[in-house]
Image (cartoon, rainbow, N blue to C red; front, side):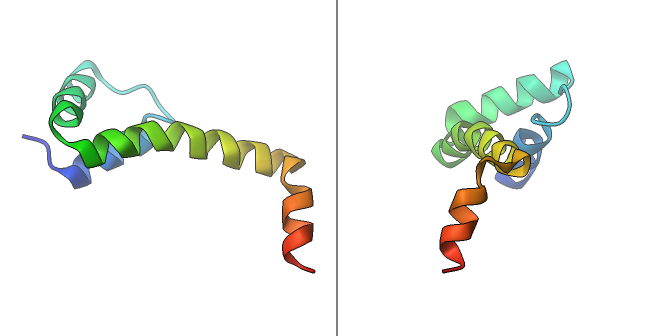
Length: 68
């Protein structure tokens, strides 16, 4: 059975690559039983999207405000 460390690694990797069917199934079973990993799986796509937007320069105003 998958543990939380393995699950969070796969959740993160799923943002960069397609998981295998076995990985998807194991992860799905784990996330159904683990509220912490379920929350993490919901937060990662948001964080990934935010960081990509920041890297494109949309976060420039935010970083400028922090330097004042």
